[in-house]
Length: 114
Length: 307
Image (spheres, rainbow over the protein chains, first blue to last red):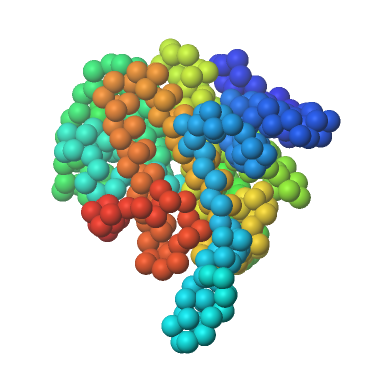
């Protein structure tokens, strides 16, 4: 069902799937263009498709969107939690340093140069 | 959908609470006038909020009188006695929402006796329902979405948004105000309620094999709330904040007077209550790194509000 008239109003249902597909096709044609992701997110946000907006904005962030653009997203409540129950490189490095310190306390030296 | 809107203890001042209760009790009276005192049991905070929205649209001066409570006749309760057609409207909208809930339960299957009772309930309500298309449309949309293998979360939330948006539009039409602004308020509120509902019902929906948007739309592989991926919480937090912010902005634009201020205060307070209650229920003091930082950073005073 594509069209649902609002009682007494002028608004009709947006076919969200079609809207998202249109933007995904545009992005497929030029996948390295960060501004397309930013624009897609803005359009989705305007259309009330907030999860789709989040999806496109997180893609834009991962592709290196500028700080000014990220500030715009954050003003609308966007934030990206960079841990997802997985061990990041930073976690592994910190773990190794801690292990090396414990090892040194016991008289050994796990990482000689540290 | 019912039960998400509530009034946490201590949120409203005495005067504000009197206004809210006045609307709540007026809806109860209106439901009784719909044909049966039994229908009074379906009074809800959602109906009271809708009634407050509609009386706010009217911008009339409210009259609150003390009347005997239909359930406890020895008690006198404040009842808003002006604009009775608004409360008839809120009562009929409540019956429509209940019939939709029954339809949803029937679609989910269950014991034969339960289904028989629900079918009888539907037949009884049919005679009292308003002749509005949006209930049937929303039910059809919901069934359609639940058959799509991987809908977007926004698609899954759409039927709830459409339904509450349409009801809000009708309220605006009843009060001679513009429908489109009211639709935006109702639509965002519907999506906000849907999102909280999805979170709270996640574990029971999984157990009963029912559709839940966190699984179908967001692709969660978790079996318990505590194992939900951080990316899921990030997205849901964003959806909740945006829908709440748009609802509040819409209410402020529509200038509903004192009712508008009470509704805004209620929505902010309820949102905070849900966040705190959710964290308390599922995470207690333990590992909660998957939660957004705004959900984790609440002090003891705020925690006490949940009690």
